[in-house]
Every structure is written in structure tokens, then in C-alpha cells.
Amino acid sequence: MLTLKNITKRFPGVLALDDVSIEVRPNEIVGLIGENGAGKSTLMKLLTGSYRQDTGEITLNGKPLAIRNPRDATSKGIAMVYQEQSILPNLTVAENLFLGREQAFVTLGRINWTKLKRAAVAELATVRLDIDPLTYCEDLSFGQRQMVELAKALSLASRAGSMPVILLDEPTSVLEAAEIEILFRLVRELKSRASFVFVSHRLDELLSLSDRVYVMKDGKVVSEMASADASVGRLHELMVGRTMDGQYYREALQKPCSNTVALSVRNASLGYALKDVSFEVHAGEVFGVAGVVGSGREELCRVLAGLESLDAGEVCVGTTRLKPQANHAVALGIGYVPRERKIEGLVTEMTVAENLTLPRLGAVSRAGIVKKSRERGFANDWIARLHIKTPGPDASCRNLSGGNQQKVVLAKWRFAGSRILVLDHPTRGLDVGAKEEVYQLIRELTAEGVAVVLTGDTLEEILGLSHRVMVMRDGRAQRILPCEVGRKPSQIEVVEHMV
Image (cartoon, rainbow, N blue to C red):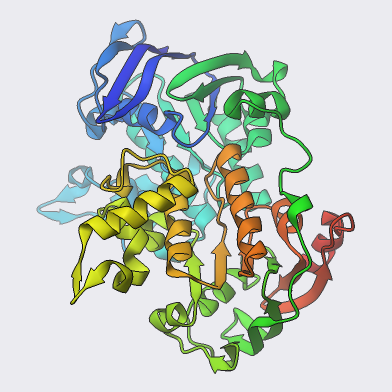
């Protein structure tokens, strides 16, 4: 139905797509995987009209297809559900569903809200979402917003009059297991009326949902196979050029931590999110925080970063009490890697060098003026040390892959000399190769005496990396479990205290 043939796309200094050919058949779910920087995002942007290919041809139902812009893409039946979500939180569900198409509901210059609501109910029914369409999107859970995104994409693409193609970009990256199950069941149901391209770094999920899988590496398609013939190990090897071994989390590098307390939390309470939480983190320790969404783990990370003010209790670095101010946290040596790196972790319009040196401008300034040559020098050093794939220090962070953006965030705090790192889902949206590099970096940091507070992407990740794990439920610390090498608790032991 949809074919990309011999597609090539170049950017200054980068060959993003190199003679790529892919096809999507009717009523099919096609999986697309590859390391960050493999070309997946560029391919998706070609299909949604954000980019145009340099050479090659795209055809839809056997006819050549020229996609001028995103609106043109949806008019031809191609729509995307974005990982970062594209709905506007300060508008209602109904307004988001019909954004740009309000004219159909206007009478005498005014929106007919009854008609709009009725149409929105019908669209939400296609994704089995039973909510009031006049609810503001900021009041929805992440999973509900994801369903609204899917309903919006289906609504837009279905207007083309032919079978739509829905592009799913990391749709499960921050969903809980129950929400993922609902989403997958829905996508399987919708296969009867649409085709899907499913981009994911979670290889087990990709194999369970997809009919076929394309593997990309360095801008090329290196393999295409039926999901039934693939395995997680085989896909990993094709993506990164090596097999997945037992040292994925670098457990052999986990050394006993210091007796020195780097960070202490005493009787922390914050609304319904945190209730009398106390713990200590030692220098050189990875302190994991496990819990379901709503357990308080995300709010705890923001408290440690100085972004939330406690109702009671305190956070101390050494003997100094942390103020609820981000700049005070930075001054005390706390670095924060947020789950939303594009929103809170980076200034995407600034260059790699500018982002990397931002927390410590004094090191690259003289008399209040930034010395660009000095800034670039430091940036080049960290680009080399962390293997950041970028055309150079003056490249915009917006144009980097997700994995390389995350490396810039981590490099920023290493350059700043942070002795405590709060990592909130640091591998969210990263491929397995980039994850391994982050795990290696975490081990290197703890070897240097850096204390790490980690809320991981999966329970397996938290257990694999941590020296100890604090299990949270309903805002309370239920148990702190030791995670010694060779004596890690099972996931079942942890889940018993989570739910």
C-alpha cells in the first residue's frame, strides 16, 4: 500500500538516510527499530511532510506521492502519534481533536459546542475512551492523552477516503503495563481499518505487536523479517553489531559505596504525593526508587532538584538544607536529568556547546563575556568522552537524536562537577546501544564518588543498576531493599511492596 523506494536524505555533514526501501501492506503493523541516529526519525518526518527526500520515491496505492507538509500528509491518509505528544494541554479534548477543523462546527460565527461534543464522543469511541470531551487535556493521565492522540490521528487520516497509515513513535515510553496492554489491544482491533508503523526501542513489545520488522543502522535498512522469525537477541545484534550479554547493566562494575552520606531526606511530606519519607544516599551509590505512577517517585525527584517545596521535612546535602530553588540545588552540586529532556533538560534552539556549559558559565567566561573558543574547547572534550554523535559543538541540539540529546544533558552535569545526580527515567526513548552507554556512564560516575538517585524505565533496570532500592506506594516508602551483586531481589519481591 505504502512504499518508500531508494530514499536518500542528507543534512550538512550527515547522511541521514542511505538508499532506504520499506513497504507497508494493508491491515499490517510494521515494526521499525534502530539505534538513536539510525535514521528512524528522519524517515518518519519524510512521511509526515516535515522533510523532503533528496532522491528516491514514495508511492501510495501504486501512485507517486509528494508530501508537501504535515497537513498535506494527513489529507493523504498519513498521520502520526508523537512520543512527546502534540495535544495542547490548555484546550479541551474536543478542541484538540478538531483543531484546525473548527469551521465545521461554526454557526453564525460561533462554535456550536453541542455539535462539537457529539462529534468528539464519536471519535473517542473509536479508541474506547469514555471521557467527557469538554475535559481539559491537562487534567488527563498520560495514557488518556495518548489515546486522544491516537483518536486525533485516526480522525485526520481517515478523511483521506482510503485506508490510513498511522505512525506510532515510541507510544509506550512512559505508559504503565496496564495502559500498554489497552493500547496494544486497541491497535490490533484497528488493524481491520488501518495500517501502522510502530517505532519502539522496547524489543519485546515490538515483536509482540508487529507483523514484520525492519532494522535500521547508520541510515540503512540492514534487515527485514517476519516477527515470528525474530528474537530480542537477534534484533539487538543487528542494531548494535554485538550480542546482548549478561553484563547489560554493568553489574561487575558495581562496587561498595562510601560510608559518607551525600544526601539525606528526613520526614519529607508534599500534599498527597509524599508522606513522611526518609532515607540517605551515600557517595558512590546508585539509590533506586521504584513504584507505579502515582506512588510519589516523580515528585520526589523534583523535590531533590529544588523544583518543589515540601510541606514538611527537609532535604540536606551534607549539613546544608536544600532550598526549593533549582539554582540552590545546582550550587549544592545536584544535577537533574528529567524525563522530558526536550522540555526541561535542554534549550533545544541552543547549540551543543551552549547547552553543555550552561550550568557553569563562569568556566567559559571572562568579565561576564562568554569566550566561544573556550566554550567549544570544553564541548569538544565532552563530545569525544561521551561519544556524542553531532556534526560539531555548534550544531543545534534540536537536530540531535534522542540518545545524543540525553548524552548532552549528562555531559552538562559532569562538566558542572555535580556530585549528586537525580536521574528521572534517564533511558526513556533510548535504544539498547545508547542505554548501555548510559549504564556504563553511571558506573563511571559512582566509581568517582558521585551519588545517584535513579527512577528507572523498567523495574529490571532499577534492580540491575542499584545498590539499594526504595519501594514507594501511595507516597510512602514501603521498604528499602539491598541490591548486592549476585544477590539482587527478584522483581516479584519488589512488586509485592509496590501494589
